[in-house]
Image 1 (cartoon, rainbow, N blue to C red):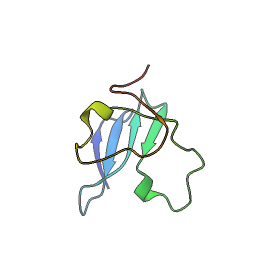
Image 2 (cartoon, one colour):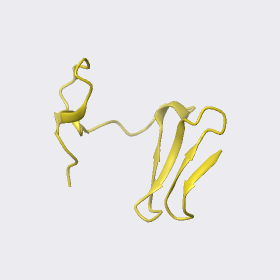
Image 3 (spheres, rainbow, N blue to C red):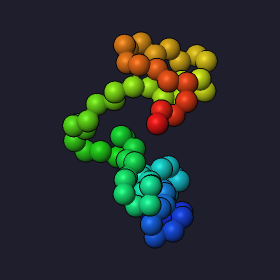
Length: 73
């Protein structure tokens, strides 16, 4: 595991391929975990799509979740 950042906020990446495993953010209060690293089904489901203005043009969002062009505060 490779750690980039400091003790409070950082990204952890695979030492073999460099893929993101998780990020500790917001002054250590939250963790963002990549879904591919989970062994169980996640208990939380998406409630919206963010940053859709910069999604790949060939990707079509096919569900009915709310879409936001940018981050929603």
